[in-house]
Image (tube, rainbow, N blue to C red; front, side, top):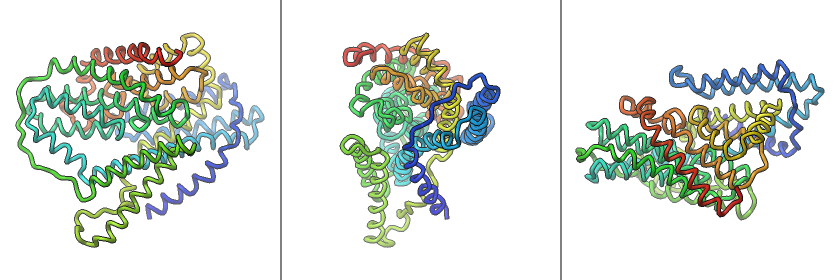
Length: 460
């Protein structure tokens, strides 16, 4: 029943997406209207609730979806006052939906693959191998943070942080300082690793989907991202306790077809890249094609070996209930809220002020710092909606700063928030804040590295 409901939603998306090719109406200049000011206040209130979601035990999607509805109702009332037709208003809303639907399908496939890998115990197998290595605390620190940096460009930074966090908790419970420092390092590494790949972080994906950067250009952020990880990691490593943990633990192997699913995931990523670069087709179409390969593979696997390994069989459609729906629906709310504010004229006004008075570089550096307090998704979508005329160097800079700026605070990224829950008692907001100075050094080093290296390749 859940699957049919989900399928009906997807079927409804495509005709709407097709109609979204109509030109978007010119945004209003209504920021002084009382209803427009009320819309801005509603967004602020909703986002305050999002910031305190852990304390309020309120899923972040709820206030954002409600705010999106209220904002567009207020925008419709303002549009009626200014004689904007219903067709123009609907075109603006559907434009937001077309952007969301492409990202939704892309993220859904990626999340589904990650969940299948978890169900096949692929990550548990990796954790088991690391735990049984017999390494020192120093070696484990560099291994877990290094793997986090390398894994997050393929998986997402949230999953990477959870897997590596489970490793340090497994081996270091008797050494709380090691767990704390490793969790800080893992958050920094996971966020940094997601910057130079469209698959590692939502902000990088948004920039790629918007056509601002091509895939090879993301690789030019590798060294700046590496600097944002290595500099704070070196500072943290100075305080890692000496000695070796107790390495007792059970060996865990991945379930049947675990490696095959890994291969299919890599093939799916290649399909997405090929559709985008070779054929000029949306990347989500390649992702959905890769998902069909996974469905087909599991079908023939169950047909060829019926009931041979019943405990290791799995229902692919049941995995559709597992992805982080709160994040996917939160993204819907953010895109529609920001779209409503843009329609009312707030974003064009903000763009003129920031880029006109501060310049692009200062604006992007400040935006990165702000993403530690305000989630980087609305910040990046707001900048993409503003669509300032700037060089690829500047698009790379905002991709870097928005991606790694959230590491400055524990609440600044999904990776940090997740570890505060799973490593409660070892890792907290204040324990992360104690090392923000080291993370800030890495943030500055990454920006400096970008100016030195990419300043020679791109016009600033």
